[in-house]
Length: 616
Image (cartoon, rainbow, N blue to C red; front, top):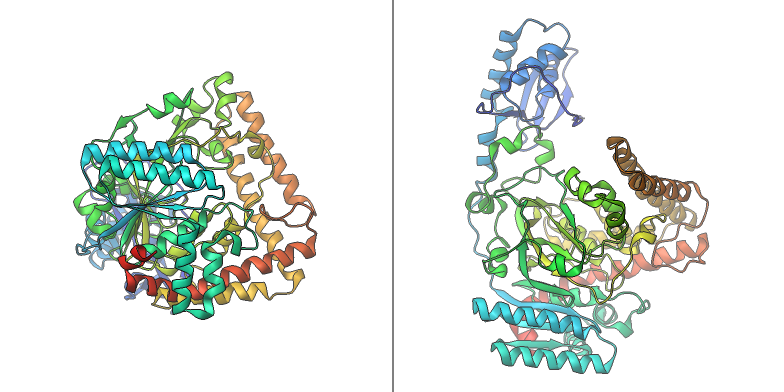
């Protein structure tokens, strides 16, 4: 049986478009030949089979995107040999396909997507705040949370997960939390190193075979790469301490309120290829005052969606305009189905950029790019992304979150992440999608303030060959496995992933080096391709933008063609091929151990519920 696959090129037609006409698109399916004239078409969605001629199949292929029947007729008549002048016959065939539900209307697609019942999500355990040696940043976040509590009187619970290494910072951050509790009357909790050790001890009694893994998950001193960024430790602690409930997660360099840009539109954007928009501001002060402050409770705005079916969210809060489906195929919309669940929610940010480099700025939409390159003086500041606004224009759903989500439904087992290294959030997003194939992240068009402790210049990294970090590799490794396994239980899927990781960890060093080289070639080729398309698409762009875009292409091309050891970003620069293979094995085995033991740890934490947080 062969896959019935389509390519999603732009279709053109000379027929007049009636904006009020219903839109239709062909179902995705699998094809098997019966004879030289006939085939069986099996609908992917429900497994139904239909016998048809290859000419009808060819007509369906021309109808893969949502367009009116008149447009489909015109395209088929002009494209398929022998059908010129046979519009009426083509229309009869398409009407028959509509009756057989092989061509579905925009109305049917939306009804199908929104047919899921309303869920009853679990309560929210707490707002968890990851902190690490930035008392000034944490203090400012708590000030904005104080204003939030005074305005909305929400009375939420706040828990700081503190990974600080300097005693003075620990004391200062504890003091800030006490002051916040006095000012708001909110229940608070503090989880520092001592509390994490208690959590390790408590969980090790339940799973003694996993004691070393638990320690690596949560304790800086227990991990062999303790010098790396350790945001994953706070992530793992928050997921265990909220197991069985919902949570919100903040980092200490964030600030309320949520704000909304002037380009925001109501409703839901079904297009998976839509990119976020960016605006570039002259100063941090200007960025922090850009947009309109949200008048709704930001936590309630997200919690209203988190844990619900996507269909209910679209039906009740963010409706789809059927005309937004125009030009999209059912295959591209396969994540928007009646099984889809909103398991995390996200927002944009204003202030400091959330990325380490600025390659993304060379693949902006037209309006964002115009703001980016408005004049040379502004451009030279913008390339470091020192003060920006970044958010979607309309609510959308994505399969894998790129940044740290705002709220989580942890009544479904949220997976662990690597306790060390940057990119831990996108790696966790990939594992979530692997464990829960119907899980989606809902990205709302609001943004939160993000002010790092110091300005970080990104242009040097942008104009250097991209070197993905370990967690980038792990994320992409997991994504390549997604869809290949069929276990129903998330715990079984996570254990399967552990086995897959160990398989590569046990490969011959020469094969591991080849795997790394192939991966680096893939990511750099992708950057080259995307940037080259941008260069060709905007030939009238300013010469300074063109020069930097070409530099991005050239440095990544040179790296792609080089024979240097295939090093990942967190590894020492002097590693040879053998050292890279050894490092890869160690990374994979460490993460495999975590994936294997996590389901037992999460389940134990869920059974203890709120008592676990109170006990430490």
